Image (cartoon, rainbow, N blue to C red; front, side, top):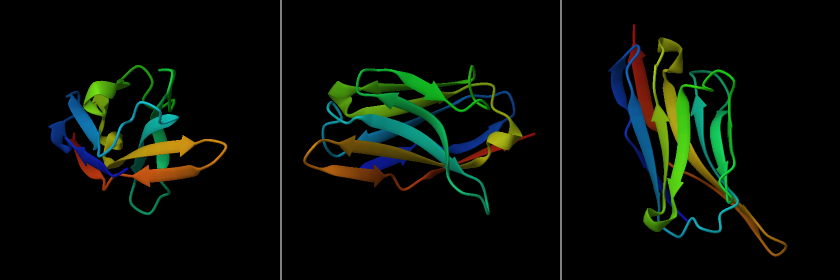
Length: 118
């Protein structure tokens, strides 16, 4: 599948943004969908993931502020970001991770820039 992320932008500290990631194919059977971010000069890091069954996990730095969700009917995964901090400034990528006994693949969206001003 191909993933298209959107929703990034400039926001003041304390504000909110919602990122969306639309899949070109069904997300219903995808094992894990997630949001990752990358700071300049750093490796990409996990922000939030949601499993096929709806179980979620978050990085400690965003727990309680960010919420990941998905809408299987719209083939879309969301990241609601509240109480944003300047240190949340990064490029955010969505990810789909599928595996089965027969095949395994990963797909990444193109990234969307989130800038939080102080």
